[in-house]
Length: 166
Length: 49
Image (cartoon, rainbow over all chains, first blue to last red; front, side, top):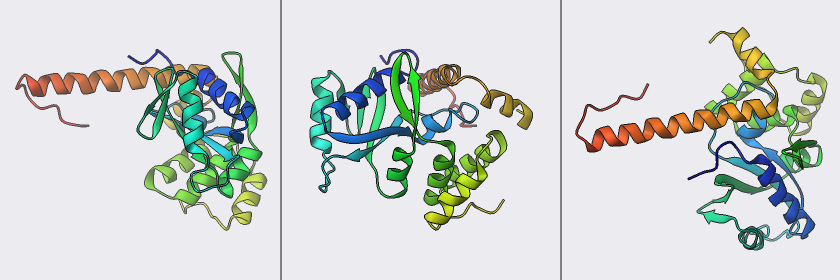
C-alpha cells in the first residue's frame, strides 16, 4: 500500500545520494509533478527525475543507478523505481533537458534539499514534445503563471522551438 | 471550474498542491477498485466520464 501523500523529500534524498555517489552529475524534478509547482494541481501518477549522467555510455549508468537505489531499500517496478511507494522515473538528459537541469532552482521539501525545473523550461520542453497534453499544459502555464517571457523566448529561439498557435 | 478559480488554485503553496494531488490519486484508485468490483459482481458497467 503506497504511503499517503507524495514523498518528494524521499525522492530528493535518493537523488542526492546518487549525486554524492558520483553516479549522476546533477538532477532536477521535471514533468507533471514539477509543473504543479506553478499551475493548478492535477492528477499524475509518477515523478520524473531528469539527470545528467556521469556515465556517457548508451545506458547512461542506469543499471548502477538502479542498483544503488535498491541498496537504499527502494524497489524496481518495470521502468519505475518505487520510492516511499511512489513511482519515480529516471530520465537521462539531452540538450534542452540538460540545460533545464543546469538552470534548475533549488527547493526544499520535508527539510530535504532538491532541485526543480523552472517554469519556462517546462513550457519549452512541452513545446518540444508537442502532444495534446503538452499543448494543454502550455495553455495552463500561460493562463495561470507569471512566466518570464524574455527568458522563455530566449530558450525557444536557442532550441528552434515555438509555442503552439492558440 | 472557472479560469479564476484555477488561477487561485495555482497560487496555493506547493506542499498543499501535492497533498491535493495525493487525494486525487487516492480517489482515482478507489473509483477504479469500485468499477472492478461492480464488473466482477456482474453489476451495471460504470461508464467513463
